[in-house]
Length: 179
Length: 91
Image (tube, rainbow over all chains, first blue to last red; front, side):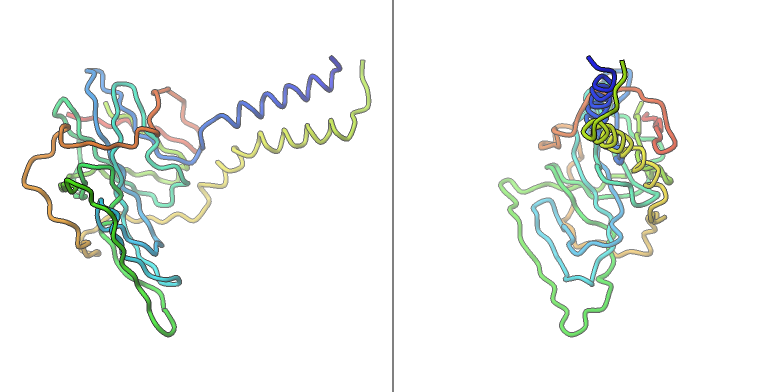
């Protein structure tokens, strides 16, 4: 094989390796408990500019038209983690220095320092909370809409839980190991 | 032993290098991007008109559907300039 062809092949292999790596911008939660306990986890992130508020776990929403917007915290869940498993709970560049996590752990323990209430549902959910707005002018008519999802049967059940503030600082990728 | 690289070879190398370095460039640029510094202060917000909470306690058995697709095995990786790992105790 000619030298440059070899080099090209090596680079192509390197490219393949890089392309199979997970995205660098993400938030990950891992279950590293030594006692074998499993857990369900949630993650809440800041939305500085959203036009749609998800108000429950059924898909019901309230929206406005740009340039109007809401500010909100979106709480999302659940991810079920067995021993030595991780979940990528947010797959975009982190946009705020703070996020909030919660873990429901099978051994009955809870995250030390968790003190910030968020609402959760028993089903897969993404619920906007602590919202404010709408902001922004809407020269002329302000048109907002509401929509309805499908709650299914039985309807979701809700709780308030204490989440733990996580100082994500300016890192583009952040991992939390719960032990 | 050595030959003058063809345009195709040079193109491959340039493409490979730019593609391989792209994640590093993104990682360096992400911390510099606009990032808000907001922490929840309940007095600053009004709560959503969310459904009432159930009086029953939350247990693992209460929970059903999950985002199973995003779960993977734990792999320890060293921190870098753009990534950080935090250990949190539960008790």
